[in-house]
Length: 82
Length: 241
Image (cartoon, rainbow over all chains, first blue to last red; front, side, top):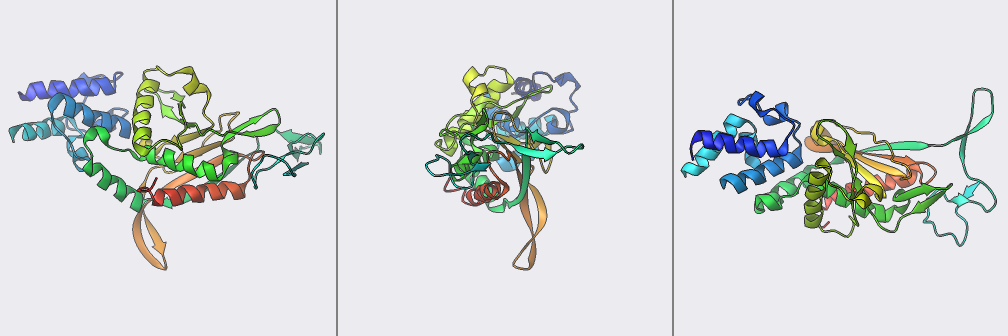
């Protein structure tokens, strides 16, 4: 999977969780929580989405690493490379 | 005159029912000295709970689980509230037609904030009888359906008590507003690290503020305090609930 494909998939998962958000405006370096109205239930659904769509299981301890768009894409690429 | 009198189906500590032939009310004197009824006499209690053990247990438990099976603190809080209500049943039920009507079922209304504003508190039915895994599954399902406005009418109309957990929004203490005819609402704030003294020793612990707003016609501060103490005790034994 290319970086762009991963990025688009992550954005699609986010779009399912925060349908009201304009994801083209998202700052890829800043955490989702600061930009979208995300709570712990949304975060769990996001982690479940990452597993379903990208086959990556994110342990709770790694949540901070996938908390921004750039961080999340990098995390997924790293896991796919293994 | 309100009292617990013989042959009455009310647990100890409740405010009781009006003696036959007498109307119940909590009253105050107004500015000109007349007696007027307070129609919504609420009282508020707050308790800080050491959550260190609970959080540690939750993290360890979630490490063992696949992502779909992970638990959120919210499920534990609902379970602790539901079990504590068994011990202080006068907080679970309604105030209807001038009297307390405790409920045998414990349907916990979970306040869910809607995207773009608004709030809805659908019920988790028989929350005291559900396992943590069932509660978590139902909480996920309910939150999802609440946010897409696909709730069943019974879920909206029959909570017997409400829980509001604003920890995610980052507030430390939430004082709830009772949804009549319910008689109590339990609020949980964010888990924060704070200095905490035990046996004269100061340490850093993860703590959370639990509050209770309750209708004084149906219960009193003593019983409310016992309820919050029970929630605290149950959260310390998360592995058992």
